[in-house]
Picture 1 (cartoon, rainbow over the protein chains, first blue to last red):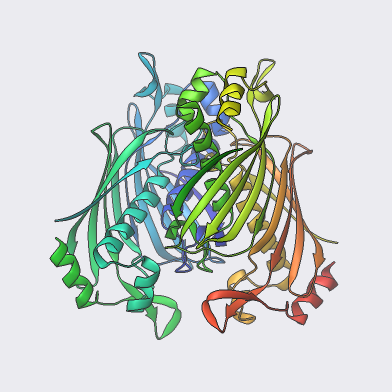
Picture 2: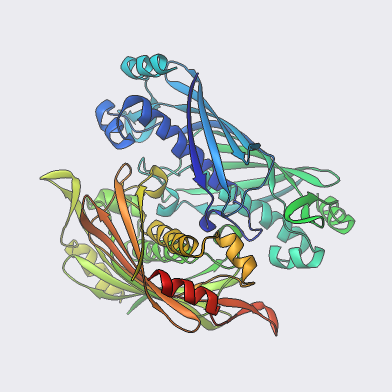
Length: 141
Length: 141
Length: 141
Length: 141
C-alpha cells in the first residue's frame, strides 16, 4: 500500500480556547497530506495536476474520524496517510496521527475526481481518474 | 427530539480554489450549531456555561459526514442540528445542511464532557454531564 | 459615506488558547463585511457579481488594523464598514468593531479590482471598476 | 537584528476561489513565524514559554501589511521575520514573504506581553517582558 508520512508541529493557530487542536483543523491537515501523497507519486504540484489533467479537484464524498488523544500547540505529531482503494472515479485514503508514538487521531476519507458539468458550469460531475494517474498510483503501491 | 436550525450564508472565506466550501469549514459550522443548541436550551453562552459548570468543553470523540451537493459563496443554506442521544458523560448530535430544500451535507458527532485531569493539568478526563444540564436538555426534547 | 453594519456573535472557532479572537479571523470578518456592503448596494451576491462583470475579485493591496480590546466567544459585536474612497481600479474601506459600545478593533483596507492577465493566465492585472458599479456606489453614498 | 526564516509551501486550504492565498491566512503564517522566532531564541515551545513565565501570550496591538504579488497553492515561499524593536512590555516584528526571490508580501506587527488582570479575570493587562527574555533576544540579535 502507498503511504505518505510527514511530521507537523501543532501551532497556536490550530488550537481553541481549551488549548487543544480545534478538530476541523485536523481535516485541513488530512487534506494537505492527501495532496502531498499525490504530488509525491505524480511528481507535480496539485496546481500542475489540475492543469495537466484538466479537472476541478477531488472533493470529499464521505469522511469519518476518531479522536483518541488531544494535541496542543508545540506538540510534534506524525501524520501517516495511506491510499487504501482506487476505483474508477473515486479513491479512499486513511490517516493516522501519532503523538509520541501513540495513536491520537484516525480518519478515513472517500473522494471523487470531478470536472465542471458541461451542461451546467455551476455543477460538478465525476470523471474517471486518468489511467496514467491510476498506473502511477498502482506502481508506487 | 431537540433540534436547532439556523440559516447561514456561505462566504468567500469558506471556499477553496474549486469555488466550493472547503469541507473542514462544515465541521466548524457544525461545531457552532452544536454550541448554539446548548446555548438556546440552557439560556447562557458557552463562555458562561464553562464557568457555571467548571468544565473545559465537549471535545469531539467521533465524527462522520457525507457530502452530497457542493455549496458555494452566496448560497444560503439551512443547518439543522438534532440532539439524538445524551449519555452519562457524552452526547451525540446529527446535522443536516439543506440547499434550496435539498440535502447537501449530513453529519453525526459524538462528544465528551471533560475537565482538566487533576492528576495532570495537561490532560483531560471525562466527567458526568451535570444532572441539571441533562434535565434541561430532556425537558426541551 | 456608504456604511454597512452587522452584528456578529464571536464563536469558539474564532478563538485561540488565550480564549480571545485569533486576530487573523478579524480580517476574515472584514472581508465578509466588505462583500456584504457591495452585495447590499449592487443587489446581487458576489458570485453573481463576478459573473456579471467578468472579473476575478478585489484582492487586498494594503491593510492596517489596531486592536484595542479583546473579544471572546459569546461576545456580540457590531462591525461597521464604510466605503471611504473609490478610485479608477481600487477602493478603500474602513472597519470598526464595537463591543458593548466601545471601539474594540479598527481597520483600513485598500483593494484592487482585477482580471486574469490575458498575457499570462497565472497572473492578475488591475481593471477599471465598471462605471455602473461606481455609479451605484456613489448613488448609495 | 534577529531574523528567523522558514520555507512554506502554500496549500490548497490557504487559497480562495480566486485561486490565491486568502490574505488573512498570511497573518496566521506571520503569527507562527513570530512564535518560531521566540521558540528558536528561547529554546522552548510557546506552550513551555507560557508556563515558564506565567503569562497569557502576546496579542496583536497594531498590524499593517502590503500585498505585492499573489501566491497560490504549490508555490514555495520564504518567510523572513525580523525582531525590529523590543520595549518594556511590547515588541515589533517585520515580515517579508518572497516568492521566487521577489517580495510578495510585507508586514509589520506590534504585540504586547499580557497577563490576566487580577482585578478581572476576563481582562488582560500588559506586563513587562521578563528581563531574562529580553536578555536572550538581545544576545541573539
